[in-house]
Length: 284
Image (cartoon, helix red, strand yellow):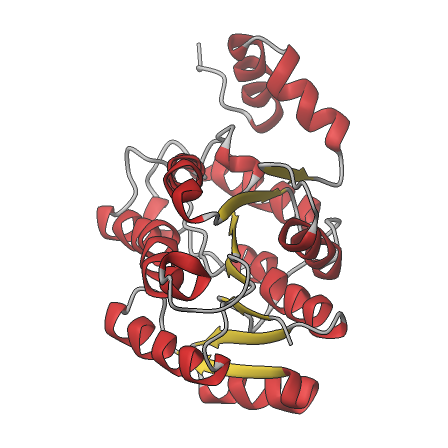
């Protein structure tokens, strides 16, 4: 049986990917941070999923998990690693708490790096294992190619994931391990509930306060109209199993608008449209 490690499977894209992979005969080793999430996984998926309780920023825990997966694979290579676990930190960059940005980068950038280092031998850098080399799927975002106001920390982390993935894809050609980016737009997950609950109190005296609240309301409303996590799961399955996969899959509820914004609109024009949309025009 093929096996894949998926990080951050308690909810959202990770949970959707787990469901799709398990339904297609791929055993999932899924990382969660809480025992209750591990119990929920076992209840829903039974023996098709093995929970790994860890934080993706914990290097020692990842190494231990890799040793556990190695033992269960019995000398076979891992089919795939899906680096999905992540968080979203928001706020105006000139005022945001630097520690929040450090946390954002630690989880979204160092997490995938540490996971990749831990599981790379099982994917094929260890020549003693049997089978074809596995693949790595790194979950980025449409925000990994274009940044929006108040999502600077998140976009910075996803821009980093894009660059890291490109370098890694070329480095791992030596071992036949492919690296593919999946960059979703809005997905219907509980991240929007969390976004709605973000405390704007630290910006009570900020000139950004009203704009930030307006942005938050509109951003959450659009997010709740996003794609189902299982749809992203199908894209991830394709990235792992297609004979000739793309290097990057951008998946959005409104792909035409997203492509127009990136490919055809001059950056200054896009700046103006965004500013007008959420009220960022300079006051006279």
